[in-house]
Image 1 (cartoon, rainbow, N blue to C red):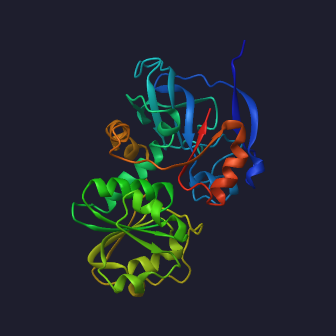
Image 2 (image 1 turned 180 degrees about the vertical axis):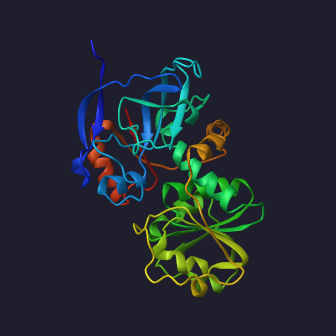
Image 3 (image 1 turned 45 degrees about the vertical axis):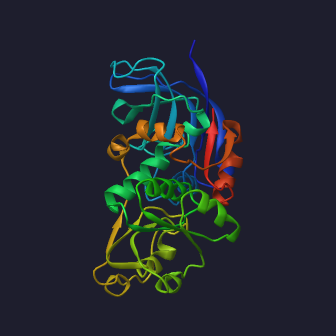
Length: 325
């Protein structure tokens, strides 16, 4: 008898209601692939863009979304993993080129799977892979963060922003974060921020009253990028690694005018190799020991995926949204 699973399938771009819970055959792994029984996965803004038809990476349909997932190895024909291993996977075409994690099972290349030896709850494990990969990669690959750096996180209440603040603080940086809501200042301070700016799209003038920043992690995106460039000191680095502002492009961008002299502009968008280079197990150990705080916003069940996407789209979570399967 053909084994089936619950899966969230979309047949065309649109609003959250295009996500349909269906019964699908459980995929059969070949050598070099891993079948993972999904236990939890985080929602990502890139999935919102794919769902709405505004992604730079165009998916083919029908498609099961989900660029990351955590769970238990069900089968690895090539012997790369043992049945029952707790694992995480992310990127590499998940949810775009091939079906992703919005399902009870997913089949992925063995080369993009990490074993995690941890006793953390699934809602915490599910929040970790893509969030920490992005924060870690942006901080240490693109921004080259060092102890003593002054770091500004634009979009501080996003899940990546919160993770980046916690990681940077642990590495000895001075951390400033932005938020549009004054009532979230205490949350940011508790999460590692030393200073908080209330976001209005134009904080450069406030920054100039104090000391500029060595490193700036731009997570809002193009809507605040030019202002962020003005917040960097000479020889500082600005890295755009997010698009919370929902705009991919910057009209009438004049680099010679917008980028101050001796300020460096970089981007970060991780791939499967970056995911595999992220020390997930080490970071999980820090989370378990209370040395690294992970801000989980809301959790949903897989049959509540429409409500979860609406929550993400409206920026209502206050942290990472995790789906339990």
